[in-house]
Image 1 (tube, rainbow, N blue to C red):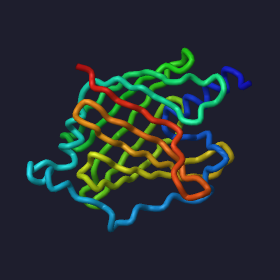
Image 2: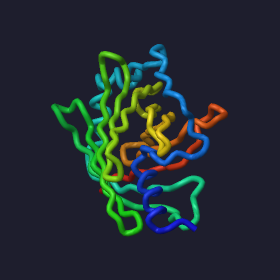
Image 3: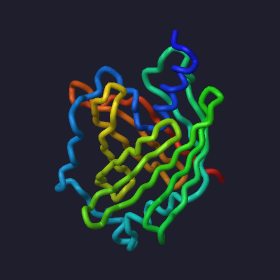
Image 4: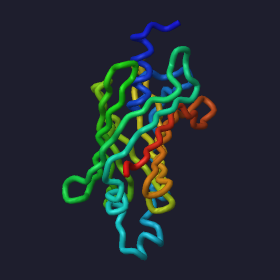
Length: 203
């Protein structure tokens, strides 16, 4: 059985979403840049409202609770972890900043996530950081429905010094619920989900 310190390190890494502890199927190849042809403009509905991707993201501002669940759990790992998050707009509404706090085995974990939409490239962009790692995870994403579902892809490092592809899907169910799913590309070329975080807006 793993030691308590070992379990804490693994769980903290998963919560961060950076997946610095890679499983055996993590790929040792660079992440593929999304096809520029797949980059999408705001949906017809959003355009009809005169809403930009930045304005769509800005509607997430507020206080949220977080429930983190794991897929393929290891011995001794908890079923779910609860936390809280604050989302706010910065720099004139161009970006959405998330600041979250979780407690894992009595150890506080904090992190920040920055979300935006690059009008020059037509890509969604994000940067993730957390207290369990000095790395900054950079992600680029595309959407087919004006930002309700954004599929981000980034390149992360594992403990052996290799690189692998990390996929993050951010799905806005409605104004009061967001689901964030983390997966890594397996040897079969398919995403292998290892974590899902559900956000519920505080009322």
